[in-house]
Length: 228
Image (cartoon, rainbow, N blue to C red):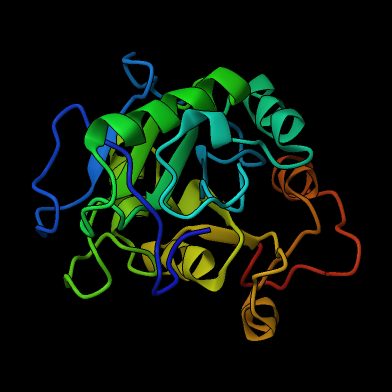
């Protein structure tokens, strides 16, 4: 989850921008490896799947700088592994305003990112907004900057990219970038966000099955907009 006025802490880049500035998002690989170029897929598979971090991949601990507090949510390991198994790159797009707020060091945030990868495997790119809600940047979700930056780093076409998150800002950012958004609601997702989402899924694994195989999702039928 990312995008609420009370946002979360961002992850440190190998080439960090000044905290609180509006130079753009941080892009890095938590494990230090080079981001792979996506394979050429058939029409049925996306170029990449971008996941929100807090509330989507791991339990939402506000401004977390402690790797010991990183806990994957149910079905996440299986879901992310299923995407990788199909040869589709996975990445993270995350609002992390704790850096702009002075609540976290770069080292703390990077440690959390590395712990996520220890538990869930490597992500091709981490695209992180380090700005606060009032900084006027173009990367903080619901703006499209994180999605566009991750796609550019991966060589992925936004129109063939999927963003999966737990709040309205995630799917709004996807739509603004020309990507497909799938909402996986949690207890903090607002009813109006669920109603406005073109596609929802009860779990991350259900969302991945919908994206990879077009499997029907219990309780929701994708609209034509969501299926683009």
